[in-house]
Length: 173
Image 1 (cartoon, rainbow, N blue to C red):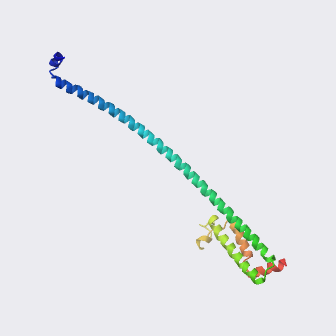
Image 2: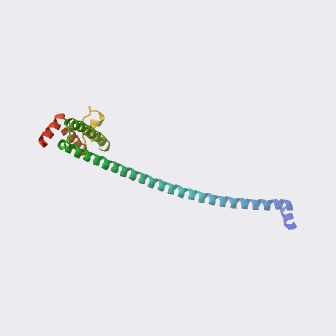
Image 3: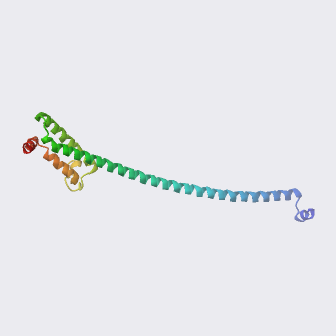
């Protein structure tokens, strides 16, 4: 070994330094390669986690949308049921045996409730064609009324006049 060192013109301490440097360089390279592999694995895991979270968020959004749609449908069914019950109550009023003053107060109360049902219905069934029809009207009254509301408004108009009550009572009596 001394001959080799002499041939290279190196001292033992210099050779030891070179060997240690080479080992350190190798270990550094090996650590960097492992670190790079670990980084790649962490990146892949983070990517998969982000993809899973995105899928979960999409499913959650879809479920929320469906819940909202079902709630709206439930609300419309409830509103329609209340409107039908109110119309039935209004149709029966003229034949009930009540004092005229009490019947008149009840009549106005029912008309008021029907008007409220019509206004609530406008939230569920807004007018269509509002760009072209009734542009000079207030926003709620622009366009064409949807058929379901049209029928309620017709019922309101039938029961709107005070003398209609008298006419209906006279016709039924």
